[in-house]
Length: 211
Image (cartoon, rainbow, N blue to C red; front, side, top):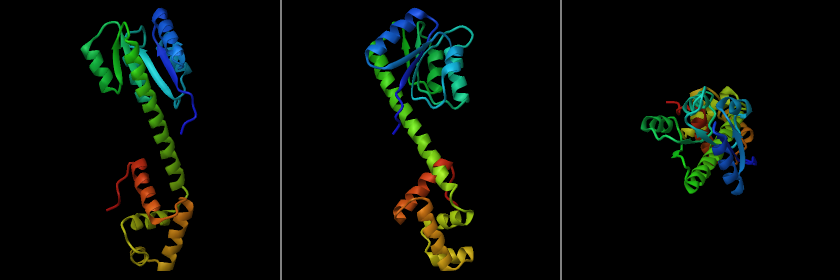
């Protein structure tokens, strides 16, 4: 579980809107940081920070939609709630297609805003934990040798040590040594745990089971 304190980032070129939102959210016990434009936000924000972005859709120089595209291109998974004083179906559609979690028109409904922020922060935490789990799996995979990976693939297919030995032209005892190394290096205590790790590794690496 992450120990970071979630932050609500507000990017709006209207200081009155920005100040009112900061006061509203701070009163709810949320940590809030405001920015007058996309440039200042990009200079401050660090990839991996936990939180949610409240983003004005129409701003000079870099618009809200442009900032969303930039974050997506940089693989910065920060949930976004768009706010706008002028509802536009096309803009709304573009925002949602690119992953926005809500699109609010001014004056902002406080309850809907808070509900959206809660959903966004939960989503951000889940994404952060998934990334951390993937990194952990990749680190564990890096500990095993290519031969051990071949044995692991065949264990996952349900083959016995004797069958694996025949396929890889090894002795059953050598296969058993590789199996023991897998249990040790991957920190698993049972065959079921080993198979669960294998399936998670396939998902984390985006690979399919070997045919």
